[in-house]
Image 1: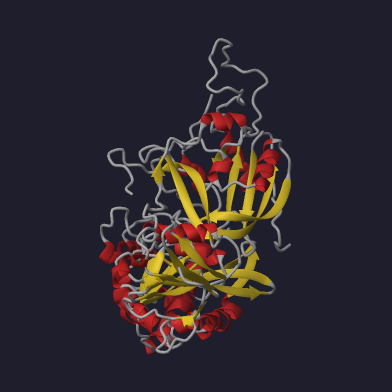
Image 2: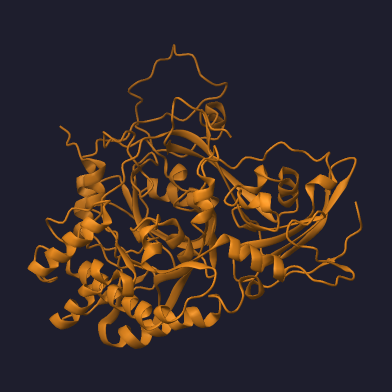
Length: 603
């Protein structure tokens, strides 16, 4: 006898908001297949049946994860802290981060459950808002009538109360939330009190930020200023920028938010453009997003409760960029980055290899494009010199359209390289004071009175995003190491192009100065593709020669000695996972039958 448990039910009964945007649980069976994982998605949007996904395919594989998987299959308990590559939520970038894995066997089963946390995820903020007057004041700050003065507000679509159904229509959802809180207090048994009080607190301090500071200044070249919080508030100023906002209002599913938490620098995010170049102008007009996490320490606990940032107007940034990186008098250094220079291309790329800025007008429409499709020979050179590295992996849950396929010298001299402050102009937004100001607001306006840091727990639940799947090959690029300067020649046979690359400190950017493409026509023009490509998946014979550890049954119940082997070597038996009703025991265990130790947790 078996019991069907939908993926939605499984994810609803697992913790989420107390583990932070980058913390999660996962469970695997004796064959290493995940039963529960944030990256596990249904095969079909009309069905909740998930694909069969190995743990090492759900994440980016490394040797330590192989060892963790083996230990979990063998029913052992353990904990490991490791440095790992992390694929961004939008699957365009790779981050390097530290994660602590803690795992144990589920009672009375052969299934294993693990908790994964970043260094800042062992504690979370729990608001204390007992006064009705304070609650009412903060609730008023998210009302649409106040968007003009307090900024446009997006509410993360979470299940704050029974009867409040998450919706993609932000305005309707916001109005429904306000009306519901007017009818019953956050402490109502029908509501998740911690979710609501954290949201109201975030609404209050973000409103203070806009009214007391952002309202008083209008920095040139900035399309929008925004703050997004762990509690589920995204506030954009001015209102007009909020009306055009396209980022995910659920901060736990917003790629810029999760990446900002993973990195202690300013994160520049390239605008999205599709593979056929449709809608390029609208992408450029949306601006360049820059964000950074707010870091706090309360009683020695490390927290990252919010992300702040701006969207830069492209033309204004280009004008400032070309002024800063060009000099009227050059002696022995290369500094001809004047607008539309005939001799040199000056560009800024992000850590994923996407174009963010150039001194050439014909490059501006390509902002957001992978640079390997713009200047393939130079991008290949940057790979060969280890400025960039790349990671290839298979996504067994990608969305595929069956009707269409993916489209896809001189001696060295010194180079004048601007600082990030020069490029962005100290009079804009990038001064340290801008981020210190928000930290001060957190500490002086709210924390002493309304907050406490508590251990991460497993008291709340969430819905999955349904998504059809197929196999694709993904390639993400990232900075290989901490080296900051790279120089050399792009050898094209009959000619060569001089280049210099310099990473900009405290950012995910690299500044490139290279002799223009038209000065050397014989360079390779074959595009270096980053876009996701449809694939048949890994070679089964290669997998057979490198089998993954699985704990199969003692007797193979579907064996036929007359079967012809697919490959020239034996392969480990592939055994189907046990019925999903076993998950009920996992969920019961999550409800308190056993306790996982959390590194750094309070006692």
